[in-house]
Image (cartoon, rainbow, N blue to C red; front, side):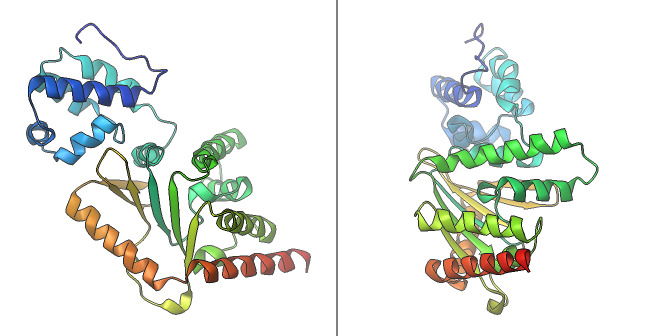
Length: 278
C-alpha cells in the first residue's frame, strides 16, 4: 500500500474507505478498537469505511501511525475531502448522496432537495446580497445538482415535514412560491416523496429547536444532522441518533397526514397564483 495513490476521478472517498477497511482488518483491529485511540466511536470508523464521512488529515495521520500504512491515508485524504459545498454542510451533503432513506424537518424554507431554480436563487441572493451573479449561479447549480437524487423513481426514500411557515414565507414573490409549492405537490402526487405539514394550530411540537435531518444507509450506521447559521453538526452516536429519531417520530404525529398536507400545499399555491394576477 505504501507506493499506491488513489485516483481522484473514481469516487476517492469510497476508495479511501475501502482501503481503510482492508488495512484495519489486515492489522487485526475491529472498528471499535481502531476508534479508541482516535477518541471516536466504532460507528464513526464504519462511516469512514462506507464513505459517508470524510477523513480529515489529523485522523489520516493517526491512522497511518496506528495501522503502519506508511503515509498512505495522509497522502490521499486530500482528494477525498474536496467538496463543492460549504465546510459546515459538505459532510452532510456527501452522506445524503449515499443514503437509502432521508427524513427531514424544515421549519423555515423548502429543503434544498425540493427547491426550484427560482426559489433557490432567491434564497441565495437573500443570504449573499452583494455576491456576483456568477457566484449565485454556482450556488444554484450545486443545489439543483443535489436534486438529481430524486431522478431514481424509488431510492432514496425522502420524507419531509414542513412547518406551515415554509408555505407562508413569500420567498422570491408569489410566482416563485406558486411554482415551488406545485413542484412539491407534483413529487407527492407521483409518489416520489412523502411530505407532511405541521400547521400553525399545532402549537408547540418536538422540534421547535430547529431543523433536523436523519439519514439511513445500507452498509453503515445511521446519521443525524442538525444545523444553525452557517454551522452544522453530523451526529453518529447511536443514543443521540435514536433520540433525534424519536423527535422526528413525534413531529410526524403532530403533522397533518400526507393527503391533507397535499391539499394545503396546493391551496396555498393557488393563493399565490391569485396574488400574482390580482
